Image 1 (cartoon, one colour):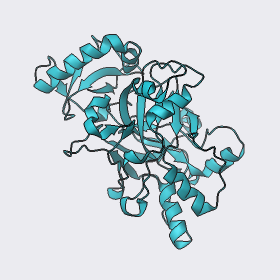
Image 2: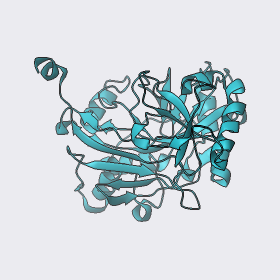
Image 3: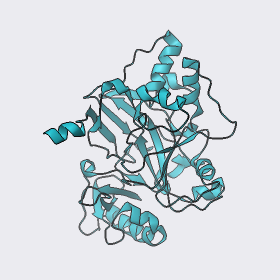
Image 4: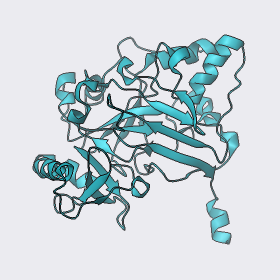
Length: 334
């Protein structure tokens, strides 16, 4: 099943079911007005949503209309809790080698960081940031969204609470990163709003590509229309089940909990490329002693997409242009 949230007068949008080929949609308000409502009442909403999905794919859904991803918000436009992982150790290993970093890690314990969940960005809206001096970067990731997760679940139990899967661009401002890391608390200015694909899908939509809590498909990344990388999600060192279980060790996770995988990164990065500027810059540092790939400038376009074995887009594309933000003070003066 594929679901999306379309723009409306409600900041949570309106829930729609989207056809498998992403061509058509059907309003789901009579089942659940928003994605949040569906997740919080999943046992009741899921059967009706699946029935509507079946009718839509068969061409029998009353009132079906063309699905326009330009009208899509993030599938879940806001969440009570968003946690991002760094579950591809290859990415961290590259960074540590390039910059001679000593990172304190505990064997067997995943790296996780709480993130902003109140302002998820849509897949085709311009992405505003204040200045190019912030060193704007991107990170292509997979993400899962859960229903209510009880405290103390194990990894297998945790996976049974994964209701939806999608992709995201974890926009990062590298100019602030090391300063904030060095202060010993969380990331704020280094990690602004996150961008999501237009569609989230239930795990069964991925078929054999969903194994061991990992998405075994390529994250296809382009910058200004040029290939940047296509690393595969199957190389996560911790699957989503393990990451959820770790997070829920001593707390309950409310419905709508969002968990990112961290930058998708492969051992064969020199042939499959990267999903992150910082990683490519680090590889350049290792190979040539200096980084030549620049950070994002205003006017640049990024695209992230995942295709299934048949070449069909799974989640739709993230396709944003990065632009200069107009400060609130200038807006008020105007």
